[in-house]
Image 1 (cartoon, rainbow, N blue to C red):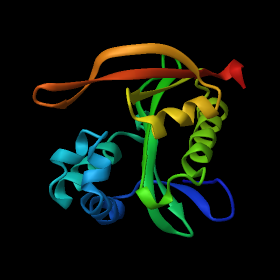
Image 2 (tube, one colour):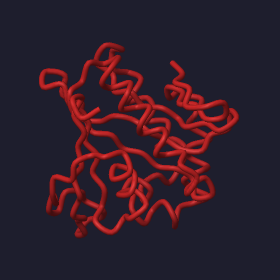
Image 3 (cartoon, one colour):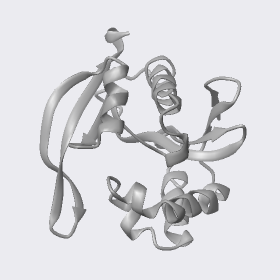
Image 4 (cartoon, helix red, strand yellow):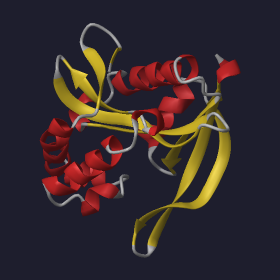
Length: 178
């Protein structure tokens, strides 16, 4: 599945052959991405990325999380998708990351808006939630720009390393907010 954002940016459902692009991006920007993304530290070889993609793809389609690569003119530049989707309560959480050189151009804001539209219109979800580590200003600005509601702080919401936990800012958007 492909979701078009504009004439140059697309979201393409993740495939196993994306593993090398994703791994190389993480490896090349390890310090930058690793500041806020805990998975970067243990993504030490392409097989880890392959295992992640496999874990997404092995789930039956009707139960699978929607995870997309972000592409600019066909080239990989990031990842966006849902996690912890609760179909009974029609809600999900969205996560995302983008290569450093593509930030600051509105790409992720547009991608999040498109994925919210997809969640509400195609998946019939009622709530989309985004959690950002306190201090991750670029990530926090996205739900703020898109008029998500700030709900508060989830204390020690994400384990970053063995003894380090990050507090998370929680934002949500409901279908009726559109």
